[in-house]
Image (cartoon, rainbow, N blue to C red; front, top):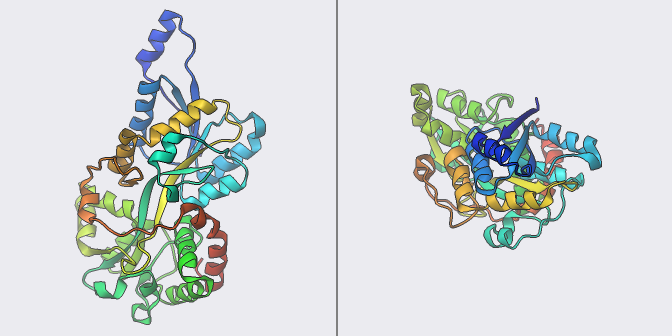
Length: 339
């Protein structure tokens, strides 16, 4: 369901009306990020710039189709979504325009931006295991999950989900298509059950002993780690965590990102908004609010869950290359029976 939200300080609006000031610039943001903590980030942008944000929330596919259908008359200025594959789909559909900004070039690493869209936060694809059932030495890499000794032990969400497609895309880039397909077949042979649910469901299934090991995005685990619910803490205590592939290409990461819509009626404000997302202040919202890592090195992270997970070697594969391999990854997974 698509929802429209307005982020505006009431006092600012009343003062402007009383003074007969010109109407504020309105920035139309189409967002597939559905995190309450982002509210403060948007409000702070309005406070700093006076630019009001008119935000339309929806699922990724809905927003992309909406912009397509709106065509040249689309009011959208910025599209924000998660996962490199989804950003690339939007770009391939011609929805974005090139963004030239010295600020963005200076602050966002080259591997985390393309000419038309940029990453503003990262999340890692972890391996979690049941400490009472699986030896950590058995699951030190993604490749290990296909080993026969884990038969009947693996829980994972659908192979058609973008999070897993991006992982498959990274493995194709590093290991080649043939080896990735062999890995996927081995993974399927080790399933404890048919893929179902989201990443939190996989974490809970491992903790409950339904399976011995699972793959999950890091922020799902961090949410449970920061939860005050006794049942969530019980799940966390049962889990061991591995940063995969530390001896090879590093742990796979994915992103939240954004681009300026090709027909943006408020292009200058849109670029200013992207530059704000790369500020230390906004980067802290990503890290502290949704347990993601900032892409800007100078940003300060004060997140106890991320601190507890500790440092790791991340894959440095350029995000644009990752995005272009996802179609190939889907074909590989389909042939392997990971659906």
